[in-house]
Length: 613
Image (cartoon, rainbow, N blue to C red; front, side):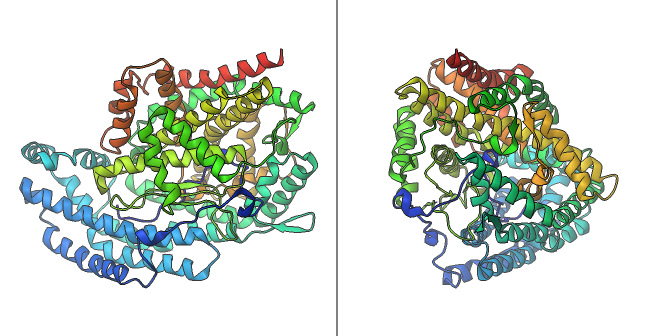
C-alpha cells in the first residue's frame, strides 16, 4: 500500500549472463545521474519531503480516519488526491535510496541509508493503514454512486476495484497496522540478508576470485572446460551456504503461509494473482500449455544443440554455451545503442524518440562494477520524474537484447506516467509487454539484415534460447515454487528436501538430453525472485506469450496497430488485460491464445531443423 523500493526486475529468464570485463572494452558506458530525484543524502529537498511525509500522514489520518463512508464525491476526490501525493513523495524518497543502494550493495553507508529511510517511512505511514480497510467497507452502491457523480473521481475506479478485490481477505485494522509495522523486521529484513549475502559471495575459479555475476557468466563461455570450472565453482559455494539459504526460504515461506492463513487466501499463489489483476484459471491455462509444450520446445531444441556441439548428452554447463561458430567480437556500446534505436524507429520514430533521453541524460547505468546489483532492471521511480535502467553490459549479443528489453520497460513507464501515481503502475502480467516487444523488434531487424545462413542460424538459436529461458524456465520455476510452498505448509524443509523439489522440475522441463552434475540441485538458492517476490516468475512467461500473439497481429499488417499499441502502453494500470487486448482481437482467457504464442517458438525451432537439412 505504501511505497517501498521494488526489488530489481532482474532478467533471470536469462539466468546465466552478465559480467566479466571492465566497461572500457565496450566504449563510454553511461552511469546514473540521480539528481533528478535528489542531489545527495543530505539534500534539503529530501529533508523537506521527509518532514512533509511525517506531518501529512498524521494529518491525513486525523482528517479522514473513521469518516470515509460519509464523504461526498468532491471530498472523496480530495482525499484520494492527497493519498496519491503521499505515495508520490514516498516513492521518490525510496527510489533514490534504493537506486543508490543497487549501485553498490556492499557499501554499508548506502545500505544503512536505505534501511533508515524504509524504517522512517514505515513508521510515518502506519496511520494510513485505515485507508484501504475503510474504503473496502463502503457499500458497493454508495461507492458506485460517488464514482458516477464525479468524472474526475471515476478515473480512480480501477484502483478502487483492485483494492476491493482484497476485501474478503483483509484483517482487523489493528492486525493490519501490526503487519505493516512489523514488515521491516520480517520479510524486508530477510530480503536484505539474502541480497547482502549474495553480493558478498566470491567464487574460486582456477585461483581467481570472482563475483556471482562473473561466475555465472562463465556458463556461456566458448571454452567448455571453462564452463565446467565455473559451474563447479558455483556448486562449491552454494553447497557451503545452502543451510543459510534454506533458512531464509523456510522462514519467508512460513511467514507467507501464516499471513495467507489469517487472511483466508485459498492458495499461496492467490495473493500474486490478485496483485497481478489476473484470474487463477488464466495462469493455470498458461502453465498447462507451456508444460504440455516442453517436448516440442526445450526437449527438441536442446537435442538439436547437443548435435551442434558434437555431444551425446549435455551437461548443465552446456545449456547456455555459444554455438561453435558464434561471432565473439564484443558489441560496442554505441553500436548497441544504434541497433536498438534503429529497430525502435523502424516500428515508430516516436518510440525511438522516447528512448533517446535514456542514453543522453544519465538514465542508464551500464557498466559492471564491484558490489553493483546483478542482472538488469527498469525502475519507474515516480510519475513526475522518469525511469532509470540498470544493466551489466558486457558487449554480448544477448546484452544488446537486454538493452532492448529494459528500454521497452522505460518507454512503457514514460508513456504510462500521464496516468498519475496510482494508475500508472502496470500489473506484472502486462509489465513485460513493451519490454518483450522491444526485444522482438530488435531481433527481427537483426534477422532481416543477416548476411548468410550461419548468421541467421546464430540469431534464431539465440532468440529460441532466450524464449525458452523466458517461458519454459520460468514456468518450471513457478512449478518449483508451487511445490515448495505446498511442502513447507506440512513442516520445515531440510536443504535436501528443497534440493529434491528443484530437481523434480529440472529434468521434466529441460529434457532427456541433459545430465545433471552433482551439486546442481542447489541452484535454486541464488534466484532472487523466490525471495523477493513469490510467484513473480510466471509474469515473464505471460508477457512473452502475450507479445508473441501481439507481434503476430502486427506482422499480419493490422490497420492502426501502432496507434493501438501506444494507447495500450499509455493506459498503464488503468485497464484490465482483457480490455487492453480487445482492440487487437486477442483474449488471454482462451486456451488457444497461449498455443499461438508457443507455436511461434516452435516454428523457429522448425526453421533451425530445416537449416540443418
